[in-house]
Image 1 (tube, protein in one colour):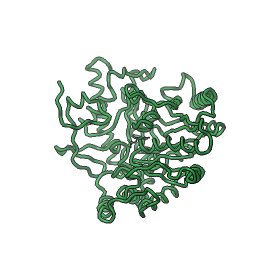
Image 2 (cartoon, protein in one colour):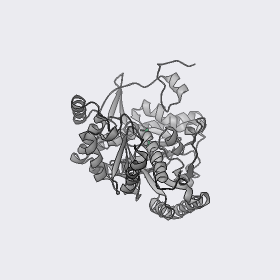
Image 3 (tube, protein in one colour):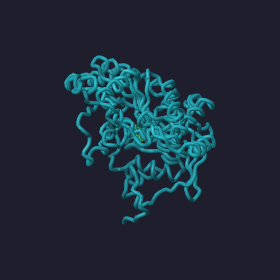
Image 4 (cartoon, protein in one colour):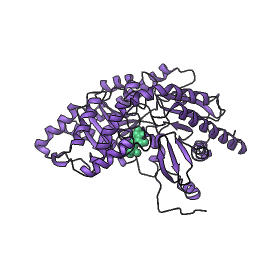
Length: 453
Ligand code: PMP
């Protein structure tokens, strides 16, 4: 029986289950905890949706927001206008970027920023006289958002089937997920070599003159925290260089300390041409995203003004003053409180907790880099066989057992994903993983009762 809880259409939700169970309604948050209407506390094992790096209720951010709303609540960046916050934030991001960035375009979400990436790649190649070089390579299991372009880049079938996607011109490369994709006996180096050879074979078969760019997350997040083998991105880069193909780093999750360094590209040896940022750019306090571009691409846009007039892309809320004020304050806090250093110091504690759960009967692999990690549920730890997706084991762990035990995380199929706030303490990590273990024990009981474990 379906009960209608409210008029809300929940994003990215099993709507039937949600209609039956009713929503979990949050009321307030403090630090790494969020509380529901009844006052039950939950530890933010995924920083909301991988975004609240500083946790909830930071007074400095709240004050910065109030101040900004009083001083200047709105200003456009269209037609050459600006405000101090947008100018400062663009400069700060260019100075921080781990590659030769020169210009910053602001949006409001990871999805629209990746749509911007698609449009800019097309625009650039048109302007420099290569209108046939337009296709974009994206990884299987990559997650880049849900707008029509970004969802097309996303490499998860549920975002395509029944949505008439992907758009034409998207090529898919194999996911660098050694645990499930490597052949028996194939070590990481051999696995990497096979993937890189496959990538180049696809480029040659398609025609390099038709391929503009490749997009990748340094660590694939929503696709199940896939950590590519060391050396993967350096070798991919060599292939792309040979065929004059740009590399877009989607740092929406990995940006701002998540991997223990400022950017995941640094940790994973990825040398990008352009970069997408969002989420922790504002610690999730307000929506904002950014696309960082090198001078060469920007220059083509500026030069085109002579014939085109306007660079015809921009949002009402590009560089909204509230968003830029919060992002600037967030970057200040990262520096003043040494948040990336804190993430580096907590990473071994986080890894130790995940590895301790690798012994759990449900878990085949535990993996992490910095403060992002996963537990891979398997039906058979020897053969690495997975449960039937229809059994919904991962979803049950996260949405029933996790909630029952007061810890929030997400499951991608049967991969349990974790990325707690970067400000989490050792004691809070201990508590969080005690709750995760209790949730897994519950899941094991649930599976046993159904004859599945
Ligand atoms: N890229 C990556 C790597 C992401 O993880 C996400 C969101 N999880 C997006 C893009 C899309 O961002 P948004 O949900 O803000 O549109």
